Structures are given as C-alpha cells and as structure tokens.
Amino acid sequence: MPDVNARRIRKILIANRGEIALRVIRACRELGIATVAVYSDADRSALHVLAADEAYRLGPPPASESYLRGDLILAIARRSGADAIHPGYGFLSENPGFAEACAAAGVIFIGPSASAMRGLGSKTLARQAADRAQMPRVPGSVTGLASLEEAHAVAEGIGYPVMLKAAAGGGGKGMRAVFSAAELASAFAGASSEAQNSFGSSEVYLEKLIERPRHIEIQLLADTHGNCIYLGERECSVQRRHQKVIEEAPSAVVSPALRQRMGEAACRLALSAGYVNAGTVEFLVDGAGAPDEAFYFLEMNTRLQVEHPVTELVTGLDLVHLQILVAEGYPLPLVQSDILLRGHAIECRIYAEDPDNNFFPSPGRITRLLQPSGPGIREDAAIYEGFEVPLDYDPMLSKLIAYAPTRDAAIARMLCALDDYVIGGIQTNLSLFRRILLDPGFRTAEIDTGYLEHLLATPVVEEAVVILAKPESQYLSSGPAIPPEIAALAAAIFAAAAKPAAASTIPDQESLWAATARREALRA
Image (cartoon, rainbow, N blue to C red; front, side):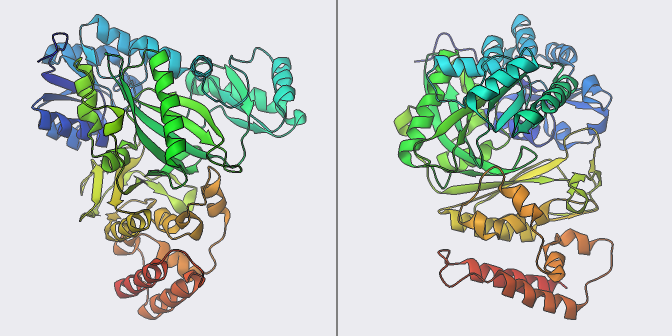
C-alpha cells in the first residue's frame, strides 16, 4: 500500500558540478526523474550540463558567484519546476540556511533538516550530541575555548599531546598538534586565525591527540519513520594533509563485533539528533591498542560522501536511490539484518596535481585520455579528451574504484586499472597510487593517518624506479623518450628492489611486481 505521507519527486535540480552531478543524474534517469543542471561560466561545456534534461547558467566561475548562490539556485528551481534539490557534497550540501530556504520555498532538500545539520555540523555541538547518545569520544572540551587560559587548563587536565581544532570547519584547516605547554600559545593563535579566515569563525576546541590512529567511518541511512541502519565501515586512514587519498570497504582490521558496536553507536547519534537521509559518522580507532577496545567519535558528515561508491559495491545498494526514496517520505525498504558485506572495494581519488611540486593543483587541457574498464572496475568521472580542468574548483578528476572478492584481488585489479589509465596534457597523482598499492605496509594493512606522510618522506631507493613510477601520460606526451636500454635496466632494478621476503603472506605480490616491470620495459 502506498504511503499516504509520501510525496513523489518528479524533477530534481542538482546543485553541484563534476562527477557527483553526473552520478546523481544517472540515478535520476534510472528512476524516471527529470534533471536540471546548473553551471558557472567555467563549466559551460562540462559533461553534467550536457547530460541533464535542462541546464541553466548560474554566473561567473568563482563559487561565491555561482555554486554557493543559494538564492539563484532556488530561483532556477522555481523557474524549471524542480520539486527537489540534491546538493551532492561540498558547496551548499552542509549549509543549514540553504536547507531552510528550500523548505520555505516548498522544495524538497535531499538531505537532513536544518536543525539536525546545525546540531551535528558544528564540531563542538556534535561532541555534545555524542555525549547525549552515550558514544565514546576523544577526551577534551565540548565547547569552544574562551581564552588561552582555558586552553591551558583543558590541556593540563587531559595531558599532552593535544590537538586544537576549528569548531566550524574541516579539511585540516584550523588544526594544530601541540606537544607541550610551551607550544600552546602560538598554536592557539594560529588555529584561531586560520579558522576565522577559512570558516568565518575563530572558535576552536581542544582534544587529546591520539597518535597513530586509524580513521574509520560508518555509513548510515535514516528515514522519517524512526528507522536507522548502518551499511558497514570504510577505512579512510590513507590521508595527506588531513585529506583522504584512498578509501576501502570494509576495513581490514574491523571485526564483526567492532563493526556492530560502531554502527549501533552511529545510529544512536543519528536518532537522538532527529537525523534523516544519508550520513556518515567518523571515528578514530586507536592504532596503538587493541582495535576492538578503543574507538572514539570524531565528527559527523551530514551529506553523501565522496567515497560512497565503495560502500555501494560491497553492499549492492544504490545510496542515491535510497536518498531520494527517503526524501520522498517512504520508509527504508531494508532492516539491519538485510545488510551483508561481500567482497572488497578500493577507491583512488585521481587529482590534477603535480607530485613533483608538493602536489600543487595542475589545471589545464586534457590532451589525451584513456580510461580503464573491465570486470570489477568502476569510474565516477566527468572528464573527456579536450576538457579544460578549471582553476576555480577542487582539482579532482575522477574516482577510480576496484571491486573483487578479496582485498589482495582488489589491489591487483586496481593496479591493472592504473596501468591502463592515461591522462595527457596535465600532471596527475596516478603515480602516487602505484607507490602506495605496491608498498608492503599498505598491502598488509599496517596503516594509520600518518602512514602516507611517512611514505612520502621515505626516499625512493633508485632513480630508475622513479622513472617507472611516472604515469604513462608523462612519456606519451611531451618530453624525451626513455631509451630502451635504460628502461630495461630500470625494470630489472624495479623488480629486484621490490621482491618480497620469502616469508611474505601475500601470495601474488612477486608476480605483480614482475608484471609491472615487464609492462614498463615494453612501453619504452
């Protein structure tokens, strides 16, 4: 029997750009829902503009004059007859004022309510909500620090080292690690100033610094009927500058018992805050202790995550479909016992950035593009040959995802996909993923949030190996060709340096290295 309180969505405006806009458009097409794209002048020829049923100009390239203009987006929704807005991630996705404006205009916001967003979007308010939900959290303050004196008192109470964090933000902005009382004054001033400049609020709080933690997050879904389920966890410990680089599902260290405890804690938080739709609760798991004993609430992301594809692959669910269903007012069609995790998925975030120049953005025209495909390979992308990567936005080009029955098989499949991926004309971080996936520490899942910084600080043994780590695009485009004899020597060094010890527990590692060496030698 149809739910009398449900409201059928017939047309959705996607208030975003790039691959997430295309992702939502595809989901809508499968559901028979019409779509409306919006674009800035920089995105006039973007794929999401071509894929949508209708497209409307927002304004100039700066996000402040286009994708962050909620008033213009709502005006286009009214003009186009869209009865719902999907915010994607970033831009207005976690803006409670925009969610309120949608409600006032009678447009369905596909996400949580403004009140739930406010209660969980602020780091300090979220910590208070975690206390009410009886969730374990990192020791520290639950309100913003009023003064340096208060910061000293809190730090002395929990003990050094501690971490200062911006209450209103994320992405590593307004964060400072402090290892002694002598460092606190300058760190407090620096964190407050950066928080003000980045988020318009200088409020910071202080918590115990957990050294070498793993970053584990729980995906959940909640509906308007009081139901909440969790869809397993994602391992997000491979980070650079507090930004995720590789994500996996499930985590190699999370046991079924720990998964249940973390999932139930996440759902308690969501239900106590009146949360509805898709959301993610992030935890730190103490990497130095027993993983089944120590996990701590970190924050909640009140939106769909960049890394949602790995959860979709191991659960077999379409999260955007479920988001729309919940937004229409229907109850979730699943209960917790229906959620089964099968196989392993790994996602690599492919960016236009220069690994040889501190990973600075590398905008420009894509002159050649060969994208990987095959069994178990998914790519969420919005690029094409001739596409001009703009200066104005996050330089992520695509998300490459590999799925296989086991973690080792998923790593092998991802390495093959990376070998097939060619992006010419710009610099990319493709070589970084080869280095990570072939690293013994990663392959045995011995990772934490400091893993990648440590790996990048470790010099490569031989210059010839560095040549082979370059993405194919760099020697398919401009630059001198690699002489065959140098490539052959490099291949031999590459294979010898990487050969695992006899006691290795990874059966296919040696063959993977040998295959990589052979491919590189042939390409030269």
